[in-house]
Image (cartoon, rainbow, N blue to C red; front, side, top):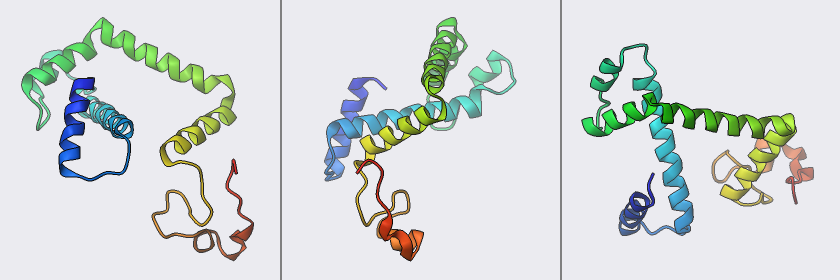
Length: 148
């Protein structure tokens, strides 16, 4: 998503909501949502086993025809295919450097960057108010967050 679009969306969000997070966090979240949205569109409408002409005519709901045609033409182009290969190679290079341990470390780094360090009395990804005792049982007093 271009920075100008992110800035415009950020301004719209700030007008409607009082958020206590940084502008960079919101922009990163917008970028992720945009990438996820493009990926979903590509999976549902582009990767079908139909001709290019049919793909161009199969415009997803809520999308303007010219935008869809631009996306389909890019994904079908050499440049689009090269970009996909670069992203796959980048991911494979990260994944292959240290096997599973490295992937787990990358996942933990990403989680820590997004959510901050673990805190006592909380269980990540279980909603607010869920305590270690409720989730793990009464023996959870020995629970020590990793990296603390």
